[in-house]
Length: 274
Image 1 (cartoon, rainbow, N blue to C red):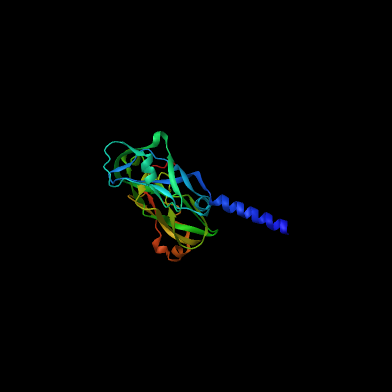
Image 2 (image 1 turned 90 degrees about the vertical axis):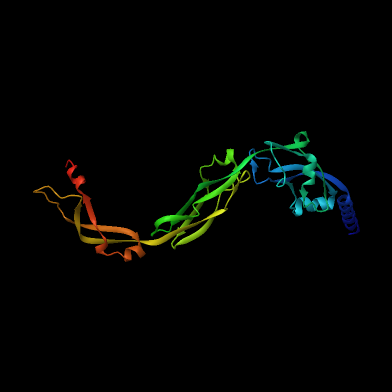
């Protein structure tokens, strides 16, 4: 027991001394760039940058494994950017480091000690939303009417060369199964390319009327000719028909035979070779 106790104490002491020593590690942090309202990204910059961080073993352990909100923010909102290429120095990247707790960023690893940001004139453009959503009712139920999407369009803001290339914007792909009641749900818009353009909204509301499927048959509905009349010595046979209608049970329940009309255009008859 004394040997095991001594071994445990030695290991604990070694860990404590090791974690109390300062180290330098390399890690990746998110890169956030804010531009003036009249400029927009033309070539997407890297999503992260590589930095060297110095701190004690304890603090580095917390930074890497416990969770960190560290990022590099380059705020150019009040800058006047005239040229298409704007250079961000290594020093600017280090100054832009945020939320470093008990550790220090000592270097940013970028080519030629600078990050080149390609921007262009910004604009706003309205495009339709393309819903990538399928609603599959439960067996015996159907979708009544059209699926509604609100809103059906959005405004994208970004570099005019890039933004004008988008003709529509997709939602995330969703399959909604076994629905037997009217549904209304929100579906996020796709986040692809959201790092180079801004969207006026992040989601759409999708609604559909789901009803139990039913059918009804109406008998002896008269067949009417429109836009003319039959030639002499001609007749329709039969001139009364049965009509079976299938749809949502709520709509079917409100149908009466006086709401059913059966018509055929005279041209359909005259041009028919049979």
